Length: 263
Image 1 (cartoon, rainbow, N blue to C red):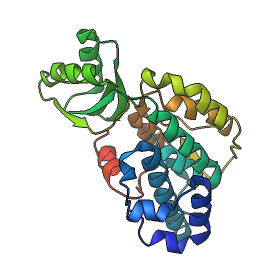
Image 2: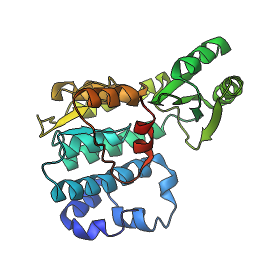
Image 3: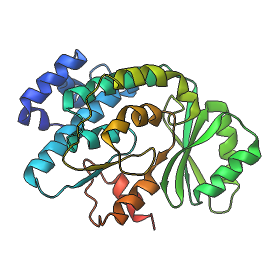
Image 4: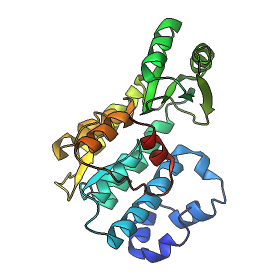
């Protein structure tokens, strides 16, 4: 992951090593201790690689990117790419975010395909399970649920009974983007309150509200993000309403595929 990037951006790579206290290049390209299974390491690794890729893309076409958006952790990359947060500040937050999120265990997550989010929400209400929630609204007929591991499994059986539904477990350890993550919000907010959010050079669309993010809202929205569902459908609708027709995804095609499935 990221092979060839670190040599191109030696100063940024050195800064990442200083902030993290380990070699980001070794973690990403070799991972000798298999730490990438741990969200405390996976989050900084994904963030750094995507930040370098984003910088490379923008340097190649500096006038082509007036709008930015990111899914969950990717929102930090969007903020850096837009110039709202500087790289070092964002990485320090991401490192702490990973540590805090890793402290909430016993969670599960499953992707739900083939049915609208409203159907999934209704099925969750009808199960009467209090610790399972809608975590991502990714496309018109693609969502995720998350929460207590046992209750997620029970909810998955109920949702699978819906015509056309297919539920696929996701290999994560925490109930990300649900109210079960609320205990980490105050400490994450305290970290974010120390950060400088600039006006930036482009518009960033929040994955919490699905609307354009104002820099002053940054600490509150990013703190809330860990326990609020990712509103990717709303974000894409906002971008399209602003005139965006070309979506350029850094490091993959997952989100591009979701965009194509949003009417």
